[in-house]
Length: 379
Image 1 (cartoon, one colour):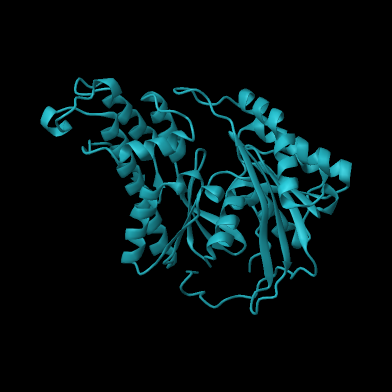
Image 2 (cartoon, rainbow, N blue to C red; image 1 turned 30 degrees about the vertical axis):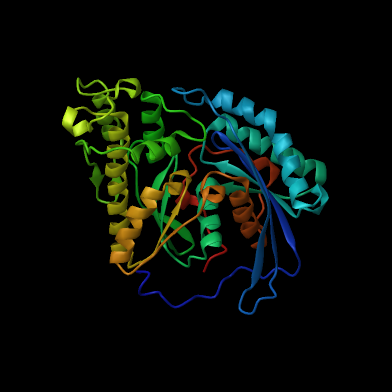
């Protein structure tokens, strides 16, 4: 059934809260450690069932030197060092006590195993110390639910783009169905790895620094275009763009001449490669998203995940959506980059449906599929 043919708004199965409910979310699936507290309260606004308030959203990022990635063991060490401080700050900013919490949510997966275990262990410990129930949350579903909440988007096609995931998703029958995804590496991984090749800093993130350098690019070099239906392949384009750094025309940062354009000199700069990589990969993402929109009859797009902060991606997606009389929804870096509040939001939705995770089932799942989650809170 297409979204167009099921346009009648269904009655939500989500019970209205009779009082304020509080949830602490703990996220640590990669190099961002985040903790946040969210509240769901009875709404005083006509037509609104629930008032949702972000009380705190605290994050600390493990940053490595230029040219280096982050290893699971080192990332987990960072999380162990900072998790208590981040939780304490989140609780303080929210103006609540641990005993006020109704539920604790943590990222069950997907993600890097050892860092995930740090978040799960801390959540279990707090649960046992304060007798608070737990909810294990799918990281991808957390992104989607926070994006829906912040943007007030109803039922869009979702493009989920991050360091570990690239998926085109549509909701149907209490599942977030994956219509297309990467066949090899994620878009964020592709951008981050190339940033390391050309020596860009990891602060605040490699992908952000590629976005900045791409604005200075003037030459679009030929790169392979790997769409396969609604799927994409990104490993080949990464190899191809890396190959250009060994081309005799390539000039590194300190070799770029001044006073003339790269076209006049017949040279290729790091700016050009950042620009070409962005333009080509983002065109691929726009294409598969539009294909999914046509398939289900959707007009709107919600972009979530860390790469969703990229303004050029939002611009390209916006051009496509406007041609279809649709809209693009996206959030700022507070919510598109991994954070604890998105885990709290998804966890509290589950809790309101009567779902909790027994302590013996709070192990992490590195390959936790988005479509494996039963989305009971949606009609």
